Length: 349
Image (cartoon, rainbow, N blue to C red; front, side, top):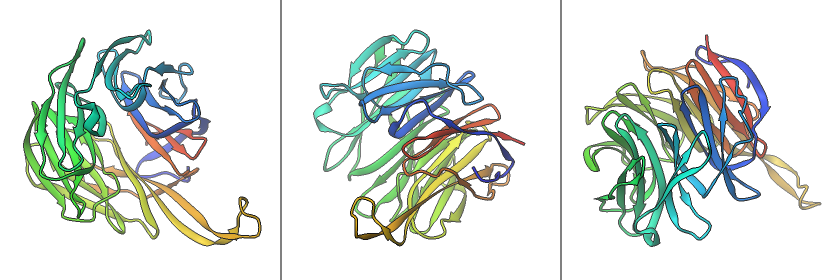
């Protein structure tokens, strides 16, 4: 990590992450631990690891009974979505103390599944979300209880979802949805399985996959267009964006963008860019020169009172596939890097 940003200082960096995950990585805080789940690339198992505020893992982690696609934490259990070895898509609950599986529920309409299961924890509990359909999308939501999933409720769209993410909010769920041939971006607010509001954020060209974070009772949406990263703040009770800020990416192609929020006032934005440099000798093809691939990762702190973005700090190592993390009080635990990700701990100053 080079330097500091907007009131964050580096406490430690370079600690190897306990396993090599295949992106995406799922990070969720609970009590005084940050739980990190992912698919271990070589063995194709999933693991979940708990780290303390110093970024030190408690153990090597526990194995999950599926290839994990989403993670939510509640009442001492991890609710995970994923795919079992036989291809069945399920929601499962894992006891965080013993590592035992409390229950496993198969997702309805698995044969038509078009978007993977995302469990989302909000103030009212945990919801599981997934989508079906390859022409017009249907969003399904189901309440997750201590003994399994409740009945699934559909929300039918007039076009196809190309990507979507969700976050729990006060009295419901917020979902950012990329859809249509023009890659429109909308923010949907759902309560008890029904869409209560829809906010249009971009009419075309939005991408890559957006990211969501809760800021008090508001929602922060991080997304990109051709040459910038955009952070839009939407009030839970409004159908219009409250405020918007952006930062130019400075050349190259935007590969990914993320927000890490503590649900109150601490928010950081991360993004990766990619561009091609001058040709260099190829180690795989002797006698041939290929353009050098230049990947850069950046982090910036959002001042949520003024709604301003602090200076961008370059992540080192930037890597090509990983950046994820979460807040434990005033500390940000960050997983970043390439094939061998590392853990960086930052703290508010």
